[in-house]
Length: 206
Image (cartoon, rainbow, N blue to C red; front, side, top):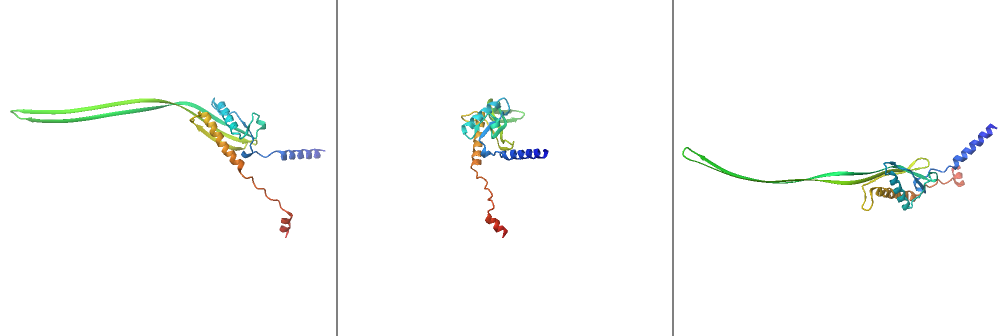
């Protein structure tokens, strides 16, 4: 009885292994879950912007249920604002000078003459400019259900003409992901090895 029970357990285990789907690659991803990002306090806002950008791209279905996702996006993001100081110094200087002199001395008479002209202009001006800067960055990776990394990217931005730094990073991430996913989906499938036909079997036996 123990032997029969053991065989049944092995059979069920083998069937379960056989039914396990293969790991999902980038081109086959349909549903994506975006984890909470590590980093500064603004990482939640960055996550929301990334989700919004991905939804607009219509590449995937964005789900809040991790168990139903084909792949998970995780990583970290940072957003910082700082001030840069620029010191500018302007200096103008003009200087001109001329001199002339003569001297004659003896016991009976003596003459002496001297002429000197000098001019100078100096102007130093120092100005300080403070420039407020805003930079954002994100490093993301996509992993399949087995935990294998199937895609990754790192993007940063100091802001764009019509977008802030975080929105620009989210847009760059989505554009890069769109290019890579479309490339993966358009790649030809691996050709299957043809099975051996009876004619081939006869040829091999001859």
